[in-house]
Image (tube, rainbow, N blue to C red; front, side):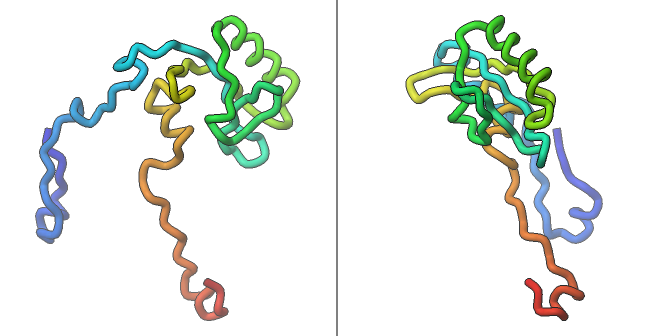
Length: 139
């Protein structure tokens, strides 16, 4: 599949990239290594929408590595139901995800959860302060 645009052709400053989408897909390390499957509970903090993971002590963390890994999906489902009912002011939309468990701890099995755990896939640029802010000396 070829991806390019008429603009990049016209200016000649961009290359045409030919690649297969299949080659871009990262295989899960759980599939490759035969790691055990565990489940964790994730949600979003209600205050700011950031990612939340349930810890073993029942509190919530923004770090994936802090998440408690459960052995059974049924146990995780009960925790999700309880969190949805009792912790609405703190977190929203809790759900269970399956994760791989290996010698280095837990890791996300899906690309979606990997992105949620690791952050944006592209560099985040600092917003341009604009002409008004520059005139006031705000950077």
